[in-house]
Length: 307
Length: 307
Image (cartoon, rainbow over all chains, first blue to last red; front, side, top):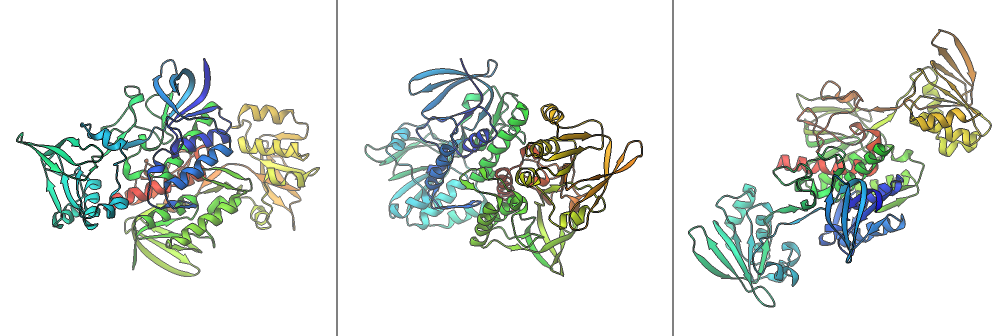
């Protein structure tokens, strides 16, 4: 069985930084990325990035290219198209599917940098919508949706912020929330309530998304059991963030927010497993800079452990 | 009295990142840097920097220039040549000497990013030596010191590593340590012991550094009370790192290693004071990337506190 001292799962900014630092410190390492390119959530950032010290980038794609080039110029060990199927923390092995080839690799330390993504509704029609590329940004796509009708699903800051941005772009917005109370900050709620082109529907769940080539309507269910159909041109699902921590569930402590509990160097409750980046960082504290910092700190700490 | 929501003390990578993020998040801020330029310890890095993700730099000066340009292009609020004289945490004020002008500024939150530096011996002649620029790097200056005699003072990894690098460059080295036991790793001690041009002197203190235009000798005192003089051409003081935490002593918890104790977002035991960068990070975990990450996380956290 192949052995690698440090296996890093996930090739976003945290994993990239960990790999760079492992290389720099002479640590035998392997970064496993399930997609065909590195970057994680970077490629989804449409806005300009002005807050990564020392760099200005028009969008996330630009930084993704620079980071991937850095990894490549240092000759870090990375394996793309590599999905981790399971982790055995007692045997210290991971089983990986590398384009159909299954391999089990032994490790000393595992660094989980698997990130986070949008939480999904899990209703019929949602996956089809996403596969068609109907995964919009309020900021970038608002102007294109002018005079159209959209549903924004959720009750937190991101749902309200998205609804307000869309309304300001001239979009007719239904803000649909399954409960009667909102987590969003009060300024957002007040502002949304005042907009004539935002209709707020509480105690209402979306049960299906319909449409063949594009979204045309959604099915709704309210708390009294009534169902209805609402014609919409787009659906924005803004129901929070989901951490990609399935691989280590039951193996490390995870808090009530779904975050892996970590010490200052990424230590988890399992001495063989470390976590960095969005899988263990609250959204309000997450950034490219913080992920990169966590990757560096954990690699330096591992170097000290391995003497 | 002038009020600023967030005052950042220290303009190294951590403070720079905090200022960039404050600007980015619309937080009223002021970065106070005592020197005439930003960068902190960056300008002292002589080696190439390959481990800050997304950037390659020949040396620390190059990154310092890029970071300073970033701060300037975003129009962050920075005040150079500004030495903080004192902090009153109950009144939430700092008193600053800005090129002779004394001002007291009120704050909501203070972010201490004052960094760390070499611990000094505190003996006569040391300050004069440093002022003359006789503050050498074993790596860069070793070849220039070939066939000369130098003293390396200290008993840890950095002292031994420096002694070995110098010896390999053909320098005659006296490694002088005040106790009989070393903190350095055993491989370093074994290697140094084998080198014919390293003489290890234990139980010996340096009590003075002599020389008019350059170092010519040092005074020594051993544990039996004997004094002696050793002719040397240079002195490398490698007795550890000192955190620049004087301003908050007694105001925040500091651990036995001299590090300010912080939570994951830079919180200290004092709710008005945050700490980031080398002032609160063990050397083994410190890097440009980690400091930058801490600056970002703390600024984002402060933004959430201020709603």
